[in-house]
Length: 528
Image 1 (tube, rainbow, N blue to C red):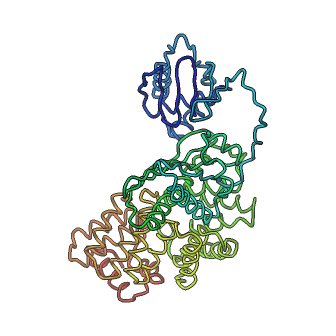
Image 2 (cartoon, rainbow, N blue to C red; image 1 turned 90 degrees about the vertical axis):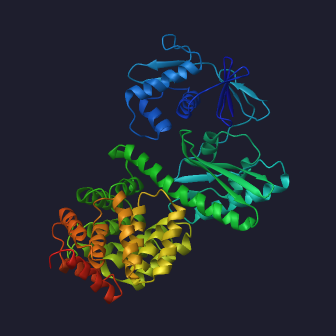
Image 3 (tube, helix red, strand yellow; image 1 turned 45 degrees about the vertical axis):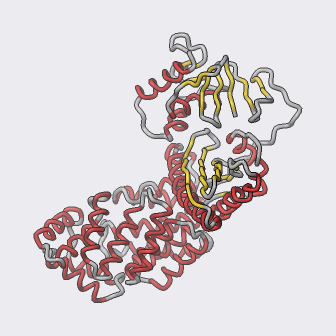
């Protein structure tokens, strides 16, 4: 797709602005801002619209926004005083007012001017967006110069579509529809309108000799903003193994990126327009921030359940809220309100039998609050069967198996989770899983080192403080252990050996490991 105005060409595929034969240097955000203004030239775009599209809703200073608008004007030869192409509308925002022609095909044919464009073709009707995140994966472009390699590119996308379809919180367009755009130069906004999706995944495959490079990008079709982009390199020694690895990597990264994008979208909606799914997303964003935020999350989830009592996800997340109350030491391990978490987990498991995200939350709650490993592991395993690319399910499986003393399997599952989602906001949960796994195998030095990594990310995370104090006591580093106990009591003043026995007694399935843990805490000075 190209936009032509005056003697400028804005090439979206090449991400390039040219004037005649000369390329004009623009930074990524300046380019994205120009594209957004041109694509939305039919109306004034507010500052909030621009921040959402170009900066993903992040907080940006007024001076930064102004400097980027000025940089766009400079790139297209439009002084701020003249405002020939880009106008600032007082108290409203900005608008691109130049005459624009669009080049719809890669060979430069079919120019359509905004004012005189006419077509005998009837445009495809615009479909309403589903009530959950929606995505279409387009056929990847084969850049190898060998038409025989189309099967490889198509196979990767087919695997990605199948894997995404396992995530029941996603609405995924079938291959037969998304592949109708194969070989065509299309704008993602057009795809979004015609298929009725918010997100579009596109990419390319380039094969040379025995190596292949696969690139992918996820775009918000409603704004044109990029959500994620990456590339993958590998050898073709085992083409099917490479397809599997690319699929796992792409899906593992896309799922949390989509969740984050959806959480930001829900956060910006007015409270009057929130539906059950938006309430769920708002709750997800704050369950670990503080006890007050956790209680607010529960309030939002109760509203979601009132709106849609058959919607399983809010039950699972509400149960997980009670998990975090216990984990963070916000309530006593014997607090009677924790039984509500078990009740909610049972409802979640019943309503969400085919929802992997709900199932692992329910399974974790059974283990964490009730010591029910039999049902808990069964639910987590079912979550993995439904969606083998769920980083959350692999992480939870590893943590639960660590407490069972199945150390090697626990570590393998935790490592797989980390590979699937290396930048996950809940990565510290997996990190504490490594701590527990090593501790249950009596590898106290390794457990202590893993605690350090957790505490670098989460300095006040109680489980890491507990295990750090215990390992220091068992390793004879008593002065250091006492310092960690002091920090632990600052975060959780009511912590004692007796409360830790109550907390971990239902979870550590090796009695000798529980006693070693409690002994280490005593040696580091934790009161009985």
